[in-house]
Structure formats: structure tokens, C-alpha cells
Image (cartoon, rainbow, N blue to C red; front, side, top):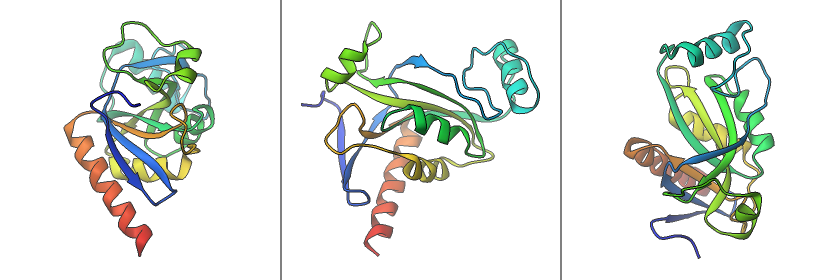
Length: 181
């Protein structure tokens, strides 16, 4: 049984379930991906290009661009995290667990496997002047490796605020209509 407050939206796109939630606390388990971009906002390695800019941003807290964030459940988080990092406009990704709002301690792997309160997710930071949120959702749909009936690997969009919630619902409705056509 899912915790209260979850909204269920079923789709025929990949015969699976999407759940839209306000973004919950993200518990990071690892963030070690390459590709020329920073994979962690706490990176201290200074290089060239986007990685250097992101590292400088993490060090100085200077705004580089209009960055937005969302979390996406799309199967085991390792490959989707790396895949999303390759999307133009994505600044960084972090693999972790998301779900249970109000949690006071990070979940263990056993908590994620045994309960229905947590899902493996990828936190995506992106530049909304390069990629729109709906375009990011298109990339998410292509990258996901979710498993039907598995809460741990469930396809879930954790919207960061009301605007993303509305855009997510609009995107899902459009995707369903395109699938039926």
C-alpha cells in the first residue's frame, strides 16, 4: 500500500504507472559519473568546460544560469543517471532514494527494497534556457528502465513545485494521446 498523498496516474505508453509528487527529500547514495559535466554539487575537482563552471558554482554559489531541479524514478538509478547526464542542458545528476516525505533519517538499502515508501531516483539539475521541463520529461521517458509492479524501480516523476506538477500532468496527458493515435 502506497503512503497517503500519492496520486496514481496509469498510462498505456509502456503499460506502467506514473506517480506525480511534490519533490521529497533526496537521500544521495552516490554521484560519480563523468561525461564532462559535474555529477555532484559538492565536487571540488576543477577542470575545464561545464565541469569547471559547475565546480566553481558549487564553491562560490554564484548563479551561472537559470537552473531547475527535479527527481525522476526510472528504474535502477545508475544507467538512467548517466544517460540523463548526457542530455544537452542537464548540468548534473545524483543517484539516490526519494519518496517518504518527512523522513528523519536516510533509508537503508533494505528499507528501499522492503518498503513501498522509497524509490531509486535520479535528481536532475538542468538549465531551463537550454532544455524545457517537457523536453526533459521526453528524455526521461526514453531513458527509463522501470519495472512494472516494482516500487523500488517504479517510474515516478517527483515534481518540484506546483508548476512542474501541472507541466508533468500536461506532458503525461499529451503522451497518452500520442500513444493512442
